[in-house]
Image 1: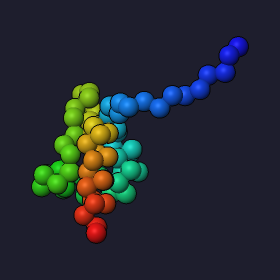
Image 2 (image 1 turned 45 degrees about the vertical axis):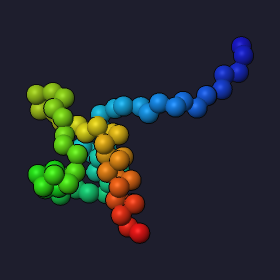
Image 3 (image 1 turned 180 degrees about the horizontal axis):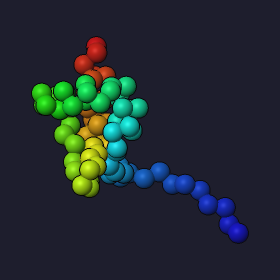
Image 4 (image 1 turned 135 degrees about the horizontal axis):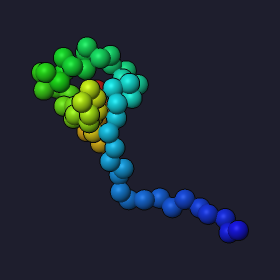
Length: 72
C-alpha cells in the first residue's frame, strides 16, 4: 500500500462552531459573548436548529486576529 502524504491546501475550511468551541477559542464566557454580539463587537451567531446556534469559524478567527492586531 503506497504511503499517503497530506498536501497543504490553499482553501480555508468553512465550519460552524458551537458555543463551547467559541468559548475555548476566545477565552470568553457565554454572557460576555452575547453582550459583545448585542453591541456589534462580535460575529453574530447563526441558527442551526430549533434550539441550537453556532458561529462561522472564519468570522471568529478573524475577530481573534483583529484583537491581536490591535494590541500593538
